[in-house]
Length: 143
Picture 1: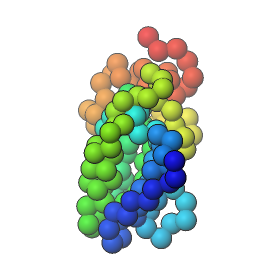
Picture 2: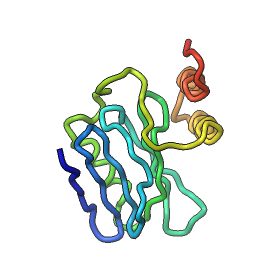
Picture 3: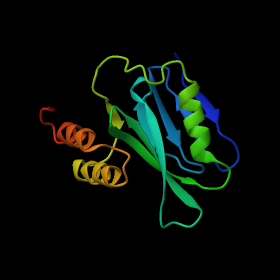
Picture 4: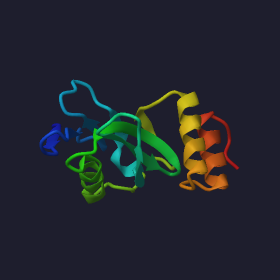
């Protein structure tokens, strides 16, 4: 299946559906993807304020683990457009081939653990979800 590009509107970037069960978000004017994830693994989103004026960070989650994140413009509802596209996709949340989410393009283990701790501290993740996700990020068993 061929790639399908979905433009999100002025200054919002685009989503590329690769036709293999994965999709990527490409910020406006960027030649590279901010993240590429398996659509079936995506189960939720969060948006956080960052110190860059006019921008927010969109985080994409699956099974208690951050699958990807991107800085997006706070003007024009980019985060909402990305979330709406994923939620409307028929594969959204299906966990296609495995119980554990697969990160196609992600962050370092240290960044992942730091972000998980922030989400726990913000109340997004319970202590149990944090512990399990941290163990997965570190490559250990989950209990």
